[in-house]
Length: 384
Image 1 (cartoon, rainbow, N blue to C red):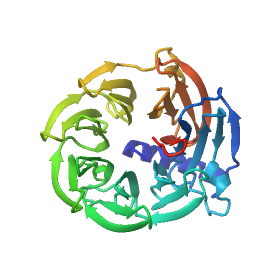
Image 2: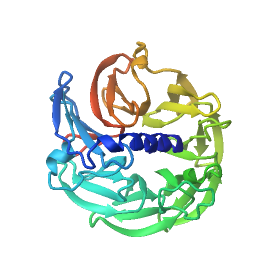
Image 3: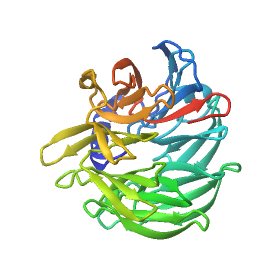
Image 4: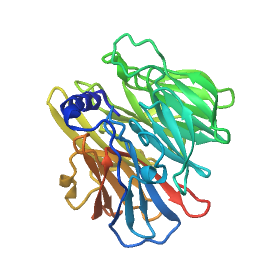
């Protein structure tokens, strides 16, 4: 779950639905033919559906580019004996080596699967885990450490766990700020976006910097309140997003120069999800304001080399009107097709929309609940 606003909305919906739904829902895999086959070095794309909090409805879908078929709930099909399937809130997804990693937030675990068969081969237990990155044979996972609890005087700082990807064991931890979210690695340093999201209105406003060799926190850099996203480009710039406070302080995007240790530019752009493709940073955002009681929606492209916003809307055919809540974005590394998910009302199945590089709708398909995270599977040895 990305925001306190969404957490509250989901908790309310859970109360409404509690009397009319079984505690555990077993999903039946469905295969849908949605597009013409594509033949290139990208074999497929995994989509992790978060599932509404408290319902154990995180699921994994798969789109096969060479067949044009979209399969819902491939994890449940491949692992029929796993209780409650993936669990509660799928928060991040990544491929490293031969393994596929799914961070399951409120189930306090990282599921590790064979990337080709999706068979579960291990589990890493990490409390309130959030996001994952890989480097030098290790996986690094952020953790809120404490329970899901909104409290101004929250005392439990978060940490980053260092995991040996061969043994799947946590070999070290490094304490950072409060409620750390996304992270990325630049020039031997791990940068961690601290949110302080449970401490509303006393949000955090810093990036933690961890030296990857010593695995010690070196400093915290003030950026903005309630940080979430963190992406490093090829120029040494770190792109960091702030959720704001949903009142007077809006969501923003910041470019931080890791080489010269300075803030380069702030963009008045709403950010919920980012995807970096070359020098193009694709940004979507839904910013709810308790002042206006409305959502402000973003579909933007930032040129990371020139630090300029080059597109105010990358959907060019008007079909964004069919998307209720743009939730996550990804870009095909070869065809440059753009994928946008729709979270709908956060408690019912979402949708995945595929656009051409020119922003024209090509196809759409129903997904699991709250489709939020992508991983591209490469043929042979190449993953993306």
